[in-house]
Length: 102
Image 1 (cartoon, helix red, strand yellow):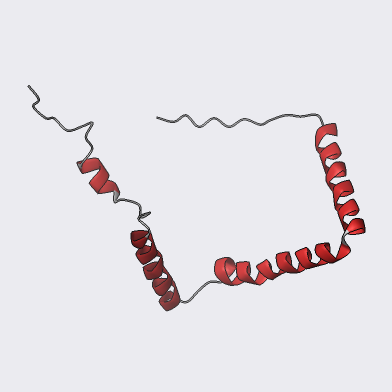
Image 2 (cartoon, one colour):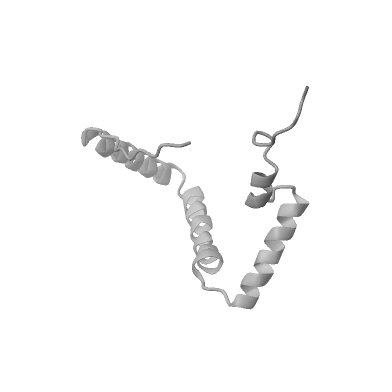
């Protein structure tokens, strides 16, 4: 049984402000020292935006969604990572079985 407790971590306002300042300084130093590599990194990161929009945000037609579901199930079975059926787990739980061991 898990108890879900909602709590907040409280830190002084100086800590996140200092962290943002340090990240900004590191970013500026990197851009100043190696602008070509930073530009290429920005291009690679920007290239992920269309992949996200097509793969996650786009409401796919039902036929495409069904094909993707079939591919997902096939890959899960092939790679042995498929989730087991919950009813199977409940019916075959070794802790709840009553066996006669003498």
